[in-house]
Length: 298
Image: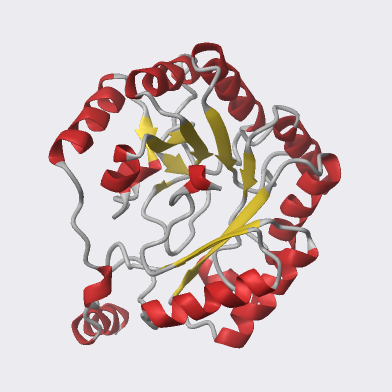
């Protein structure tokens, strides 16, 4: 019954025209793809088949996915592979990423990762190692980070905060951690994550270093209401989150959560105006907006 329900959802919910976008110049895509494949590294742009990757590559930005392709969480919206036995860390990955940044001439880089609850520090030191490697070869490249919550491993909340302190100490240009959805829908959408825990991440960054801009994002279309979205935006501002992205959830496969609603461009524009009125310093709100979309412009 479940499978039939999912298929019916696909049949009666066609993708609207505003979500259809040219992928970009083949030459720009192939250049990036060749460099990352020959070094056996990953970008979330490719792993997530981001609709904006051609545009971002042409603007000299990219988002690298650290610590392998297998995530220890099982979020119901995400296309990244999931499993309890992720691959061993590649000791050369930080250098490979740094070399790729140099070859591509990137002026703004976003580093993200799968969740690595199997690692004692959740991968926090790996972010720092990669940032150092990039800066050694690319001293003028700005680095934004999009991290998991670093809850995995031992030590609970105290260790979580220390892992965040480790990454903040490396002075990223921006610290991003996504809430992804409203509080009511955290359970079915973000398995293994918690709403308040994610708010803590953003709050602690500001406590540790108030000079670092913080950022978060929501994917709309899981059944949230406008009132719930506004409440979430207020919660983000309560922890002094500076920047915001709002985009449309697009179902990667029948194994993922179905789309409950396609929000219109006009609705996104209205939500963006509400976010600005609440005090966010930089807002990107639109159906095709993703976490790193035009990140360097902030």
